[in-house]
Structures are given as structure tokens and as C-alpha cells.
Image (cartoon, rainbow, N blue to C red; front, side):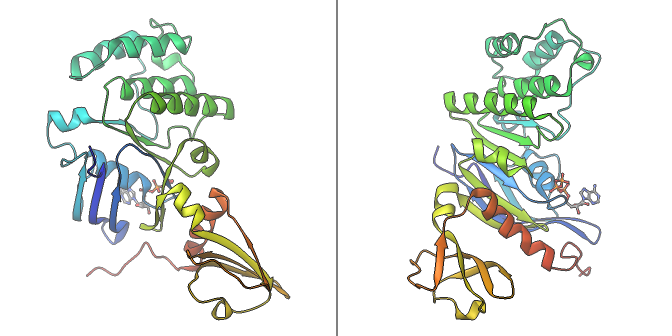
Length: 296
Ligand SMILES: Nc1ncnc2c1ncn2[C@@H]1O[C@H](COP(=O)(O)OP(=O)(O)OP(=O)(O)O)[C@@H](O)[C@H]1O
């Protein structure tokens, strides 16, 4: 499949006067592990819930693996979703979860599910309510991947986990994506986590997509410029300033642009993924209540 795994045009979700997602136009290629990143309240959960059909748009369109989200049994089978709180049934055992999932998912892989539970060292007879948060997140991931989806959507599944459990979860995810050709969209505000697993980045800030693209290309197309204090207008032509910081005698800019900067008065440095994301996120701090718009 070469068509986008997620294609949104003018996608907007509004709660009364509050914009949760604003005019989002985005096309995510298939076969990628996408990091969806943004500060609290940016609209990540809203975008993911629109993608899986748990929410309907106020305006605009979204198509996921070629179909309208949750438009029927076939479409539901093509998308796996782990919600923010990794929901499971506390009173049911792990085995009961697998049995229930086997009956409700047409492409269910029982062997894969059982192997994952065994690899996690969990007793299938154990009630899920007695598992730790990390173990429950692993069970939720197991349920989502053993349905063999074309797209796996994960909404901050590691947010509540300790560093060890987080590493285990991300390791399991990386192993799974290396073996399968499943596309993944994974939201988080922990860039360090995304850095390990993602090859495509979407930055959402204040309900808008600020940046989207292949991680390698984005890193190659952004730089940090440092030099004596100056205005952005004094930078070489062809660079677009993403973030500017000034001290009394020095200026530092995060810039976007493919043209090499050959100005000996400027030091040019590469950015880490975290620097890049933070530069775009810092744009939110300067805007005042961008999430509120007058009702039209
Ligand atoms: N049911 C709702 N009713 C009203 N406003 C909502 C509702 N759900 C979300 N919002 C608002 O929409 C905006 C986006 O919320 P969303 O949960 O998508 O953000 P997020 O990026 O996932 O945040 P976090 O990282 O904190 O989970 C926020 O301003 C939030 O307050």
C-alpha cells in the first residue's frame, strides 16, 4: 500500500468555543512509526480519537488506511488502538481478555498473543486488575497488536509507567514494528521516548500542526545559528526563524532552510530531535490563548 495511512484535510474539532484541533491538513505515509508530540492540551488525543472514530469532526475530513474511521467491521479490524489509560477489564483474567479478543477480532492471532504473554512472564490466569500499570499497558498493547492491524494507534501508553516499564514497553513496540510492516502513530510528550522508536514526526501545538515530516529530513533541514547579538532580519537570506533567544551580546536562532549558511560570523550546529521539538513548542508560549476563538 502506498496511499497515506492517515490523510486529514481541514480537520477541525471544536467543543463549544474551544478548539481542540484546528484546520489540520496532514498526510502520513504508510509503514512509518510516527511520533505525535505536543504539550498538554495540544490536541493529540483529539486527533487520535478522530483517527479511530471515537470522535467525529466538526469540520474537515479524515481517512485512515483508506477508509472512514470506524465505518464498519472491516475498517475497525484494520486499526488497533491503545487509549491513554490502557483500558482493560479489571475483573477478567488475561486468558479471558484473549478469548474475548479472539471472538471479536476477525484477524486475531492467538499464537502471537499467547507468546507475548509468556514472554512478559505473566500468568494467563491472573486477573488483570491485579497487574501493575506497566503490565496492564503491555496487555493492552498485546490486545492491539494481536488483532494484526494495518495501523496501530497509541495514545501516550507509557505516560504513567516508570522508566524501566517504559523501556520494556518501547522495546516490545520496536521489536514488533521491526518484524511487521504495521504503521504506528504514537503520541507522547516525552521526546526522548519517541526518539528511540519514531522515524516520522508530527508536532501539534495549540490545536494546530506546526511541523510534520521524516525525522532525518527534518533534522537535516534545521540548524542552530549562534553569533553576536543581531536581529532575525540580519540573518542570511533563505532561512526561516523558528525560535530566537538573545542575551546582552549573543543571539541564538533555530532556523529552517536547505540553503547552507556561509556566514563566518555565525556558528552553525545540528539539532537533536528534542531541540527541534522544543523550538516549535516554544512558539506556543508566545501566543495568547490560541485555543480560544470567537464563535463564528
Ligand atoms: N470533552 C471535552 N470537552 C471540552 N474540551 C475538551 C474535551 N476534550 C478535550 N478538550 C479540550 O481540547 C483540547 C485538546 O485536548 P486533548 O486531550 O486532545 O489534548 P492532548 O494534546 O491529548 O493533551 P494531553 O497531553 O494533556 O493528553 C484541550 O484544550 C482540552 O481541554
